[in-house]
Length: 455
Ligand code: OOG
Ligand code: NI
Image (cartoon, rainbow, N blue to C red; front, top):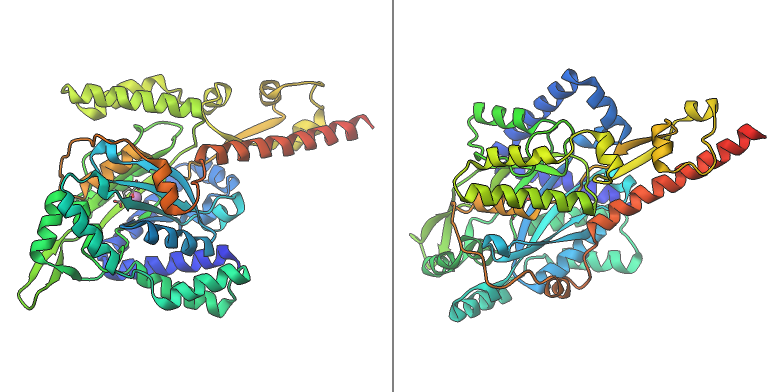
């Protein structure tokens, strides 16, 4: 079975499982589907553009999830598990500046056809015990984690089988999906007693969430909306307490990167070890929605990061963040032509065949001339990744609003990659390659077209 099909099966199975575990998730999906249908009705050009960018068919099934693991061994095995489904680790996200003791990557498909088939992604975080101040607690957490086995033996066997044979047949793939699902299931029994849970929780809510359970329960699954402001309003009307601030850039005519908002879904009853009566609660699972815009070049991303940091600095001195963002982001051009001309966003190019039939471009015409003259049509490339500052906001909103100081230590991509067992893929390089490949294909067509016209 093609890896893309296994991923589609798995994404569907995860969604079904989460829907039965967290009823608000089903409600959220219905609400987003309604908002998306309305957005396309209101704006037929949007629907046409999404169709052209091969975004439309995938929209209904598009989800990302998130998990958190405790050890290098767990992370490395996840890498092998996701590889069976055509998902590669893309990007490095350092959450330590926000006082969150993890670093992360996103497992996702990378090529255009695979993304169009099913773009399922999993934001995956690894605990950084070395950031905890208390050495005794660090050791205790490491001992607890060393004892657990988060993969079923059959799942491990099937991963090995896939690695050796270069894939799985359909029956094996179906069994693999069922077995892999077990790793991400919720368990209402903790692996520790209540005092241990409370000690770990005292260090950081995230530490307790990662260390005290049998596995890395999926903590949210996020549908993609075409209008996050309308979806947020619909969430409130449906009684889902969406967080105040939408993470990411303010609302614009041409969406860029990623905008997200979340709500706390459940306070779960937990049975701790140590006999009857050892009950308590834990909050881990939440809901989230996101709207995706175009991917930014390194230059565009630098401008985004600067404007975001400036707005945050202004918010720290008392002005409302939303206002500071709206004000600051006026400096970010908001029309596709300027984004293209100034090299702020990535585009996929297509040849306008009618234009070419009427006349070939002048020899030596550069990109600007080809676009201005109508021979090449730029279409924005969708951002398929995440944003560290937004992710920190999402983490924070679901940890009982714990506010923490930033850690002394910086991100450590080298340590993360050594735990993972491979380097992460540079996400910007993927967009650069996609843009360059589309341009090269266009140049061949223009060249052949010009030759045919002059023959
Ligand atoms: C992950 C939070 C980050 C996103 O969409 O940025 C995230 C987590 O809470 O484990 O999901
Ligand atoms: Ni998320």
